[in-house]
Length: 327
Ligand code: XIL
Image 1 (cartoon, rainbow, N blue to C red):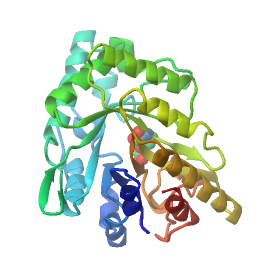
Image 2: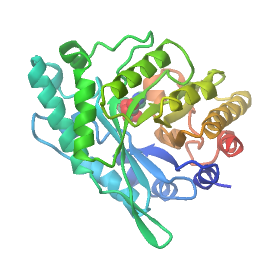
Image 3: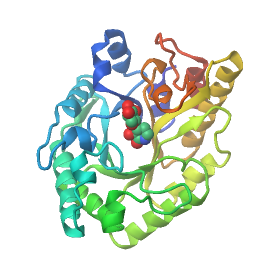
């Protein structure tokens, strides 16, 4: 029983993982990354972000992103593009530029159009005898909401209001009409003010004819704190008529890890996976890297870690079994 196989037997399109360019030099890591019994899909954790792809205005660099796409293609894996517009990991020229509304919208348009256009039609998977042209999904808009459901005060929102969101989505659609376009965020796993605000945003976009195909539910969770409303909330999202994907799953704990915490983590992974399994519109699950060795958690949340289903030595943890049980 391996993860991608189980996901597909449960009617999901893929099970996948984030990865990063510096990790591709570790041969044991790359061997498991390319194990298509577990992973049918990769997300670049950093190398398609704005600071990496347009470090100075109008100058695009795709080497990092291309390397991840090549790695995925070599194993027939899908790719989620991540991301077009986000308030973090922006180059200074965007944040400090003091652009007016029209200029910033044209900058967003040029960035999203060039980025999405670069990867258009690049990804394919081979199914049986036929080559299936396959579409990249894009996290077009990342983390545009605050936890209380108001819009995040970013350089984009402060200058353009919601126009940047609409411009980004319309531009991405034009650049790759087959790509599925997502809004992606955290703390929208359970119901609450932020999830309600996101549903209202999706309804507004749809009513205005702005292209929106999916909601990405990041799912950076804490052991013992998986929201009890997760399944219902994913269903509520899907009922809007969009895809739902678990895009950045990890479940962190206060270190040091203990057998009790690892057992609770197993249950928590199972809960998340079974929530996605139960919702037809939840189409896939992506881990935010599969091994504790390369997890972003210890570097971001002081004193926390051990968030992934494989440990630092690439050995499966109880959490792996939790995923298996969830499917
Ligand atoms: C994280 C990366 O994993 C880190 O390597 C980087 O230093 C910061 O960003 N939500 C997102 C991701 O959408 O892009 C973030 O990735 C994690 C939180």
